[in-house]
Image 1 (cartoon, rainbow, N blue to C red):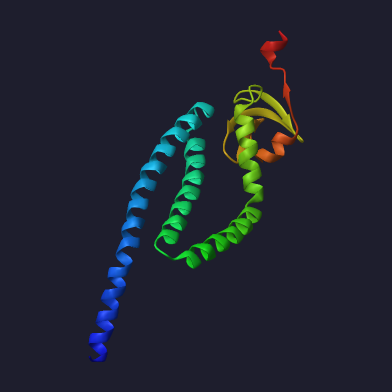
Image 2: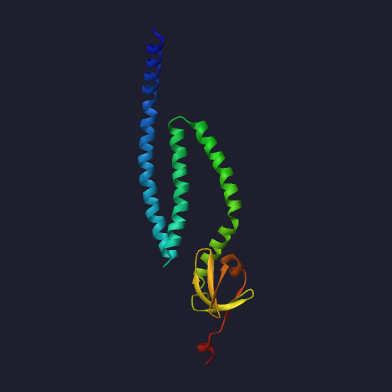
Length: 177
């Protein structure tokens, strides 16, 4: 038997030997996709109730959750098809990567979390007159990372984390009459 025939024979034996694992992996992927879709439906419904009129927050939160779910599915698939070492290495590397990214984005994450608190606060709404730090003006818009405040016709943009730490709602003119 020549080298070419031996190589082809070993390759075919490897493919035939791997078929049960690959089939199990495909079944796992199909079931996982159905489960992720089901979890997505439930989580999105919950997020829509929490963030009434803020579809951006629903999309953002679901995207973060979906990335984690699909990453887990990929690691599970790799383990099922027999690539445990690769799955373990990817899991470890992604942990370190997530740590670095979270550290680099800590300010942005703080602003986003503060933005959620400000959006949910019944005392902090567009149209309210507030003092945040050295700025007193009317809240124009509350976004994911920043809030726009109108001061004497100018728009001042402040980070939500900065505002959320300490702000004071001022009585409006019609409240004092």
